[in-house]
Image (tube, rainbow, N blue to C red; front, top):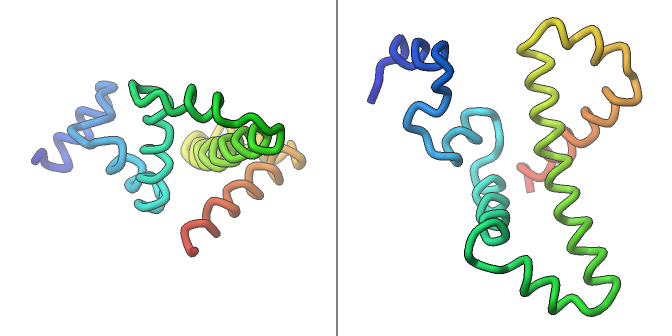
Length: 122
């Protein structure tokens, strides 16, 4: 395992992963481990050879099923995107002014971030 000093040097060089897997990176970023594992597994089944998206799309013959599938994906995406926006705004001070001045956008980000945090507790 690399020392903290070596890790910081690697990050400064643009090598941000530093032998962590996606789950470890997510946990280090503040995501709840089980939530991320479940969602990552779900997305991998779509993106890789599992063909889940094709099978699920073919099996969802009712409009309600199709709508529910799309909404579930959108909800998880909004939670992750809100977390990233919130973290970036707090890391990059130049973004803070734009974030604070856009009340509608700020409230949307905070709402979805809070929803994600509530999922952790369930």
